[in-house]
Length: 254
Image 1 (tube, rainbow, N blue to C red):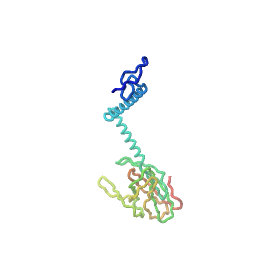
Image 2: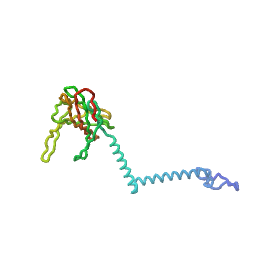
Image 3: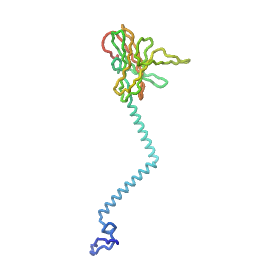
Image 4: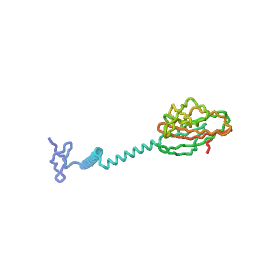
């Protein structure tokens, strides 16, 4: 049996004859106003949230032409930013000769079939009184990414008398002419590989190089050095090592 509304009419004092709403003591006309207003506001908020969700869902699965172009532009910008970060992060190499950092370079650019190449040239003066000239070559990773599979190639001028450590391996070069390909006899080349990853700031020390010559006057030894590793551009250095009779510390000539 339905309950009667518990409200009373102010004018007559008689009890309201309407049926009460289920779960309440009053009919619709005599419901408290505050809960109704709150319920209406909550319903409006929930409706707005649902409408927004449906709208975003529709945009996700059925994007407009402008939205597709915007997504493509954002994707391209993201890829470009990643490429820039990869360019910024790479191994970089600096040579050391007899523990002296070679930093004062002259960059020489020359064209090749593969594009413009850059060779960094510097001169190192080494005073000596020994009958044999020991040449210590080290490579430091001054980049911000580890150098994996590091390889150092050194090219000596032909006719130079020297001994080289067993870690070095001989390497042949060829020259091309219009008629044929033949061995390049203008120099003697060796390469050495690092068995370990060279972390940023770490050094790779090459095996010994000993030049069999007593220095009574300046002895000029040009060395072409190439350094390469994964994720790094090949670094090319023309190091002109000048042995002079006398004593003192090695230094980079400016």
